Length: 446
Image 1 (cartoon, rainbow, N blue to C red):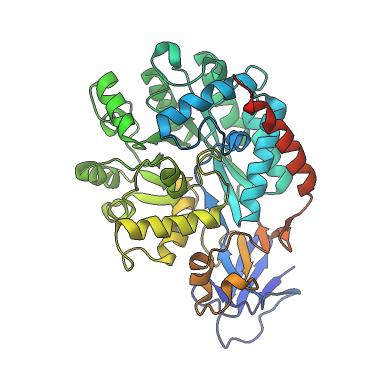
Image 2: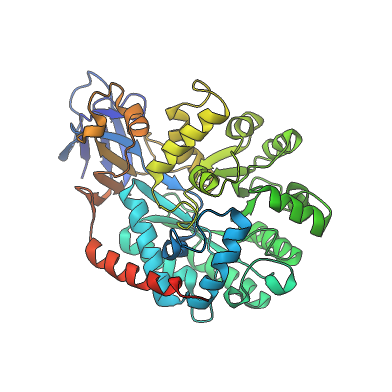
């Protein structure tokens, strides 16, 4: 069946003024201005909609939806924030609460127009060694694509780190599960619904041996690597104190300075480090909202891109954002980018490109993130019916500047996954009640 998304208000693509024809989960045709009606079997009247490529989120911590706006952690910078929350995660995170956290995060992302999500998963309490499988199941339930990461923390408070030992596993168990997860979920084919990256958490809570082992496994299995780096000045100080080198030098010393890698945050790089990141085609996930909440700094997006690095967007954890909304992230990336540069240097099209093509490249995908013939039929459709959009002249700019935050429809692989603002098959009231009840546990003292 050839479905024609007919005559939208606007499309973030060239030559698609009259819409898009989809068949078998792919984009078959772009219908330009003045073109005759294309060959089609069915029509979706898109005259109320602005169509974007499906947004791609490249950094999150789904479990943290359980500790949003936590009284012990608000108004703190990263390290004090972590020290406040790690004991609570260690005390109260279990598989049932984790599943609800994942479901809430993915649902919120989907409703914001996100079609592909990546979670930086590194917490493995005793009763959830299959945490990656839970995420895969919940993404499949919603029909979302997911870039699964098999992460790890193995350096806790007892060894000078900040993590809680109750969230850790034995190194041999970690390596074995990395192999298992890659074998089960890492689909390299066009249109894949699941891919896998290996994701040790950060230099301040993962050993050198584990960083090296992950790099070796990624090379062996042709998968990507992900970690936090350059988020705060405290991290720089930690690496200088513990390793005698800055974070990027440490990253290179463990075999991570290559095009397989994308980094979360990437704020505190000097000019020479920006050049090195670009030379090696390393990716950087800009997490504008989280960086502002924790006062971490501003990512040097334009210099990184100019140097050759790949820039994408991520919402980061829902305890440092405290939302899982990709359209809000696009707007915040634009605003903080203009504060760093100027109003002409960072445009709404830059921010949207980071959230689509740029993010897709970070997770190793060339089949998503762009509306073009042959690409996957992943779209986010927004209306301009709300009062906030009244008077807007440029429909695509209006989504960013006027603050769109909820998609009216979302299509993934040619199938509708959100209709009239509601995710298909999800009882939102029930999810809100169950997730809220689960979160109450984390308000107790650890």
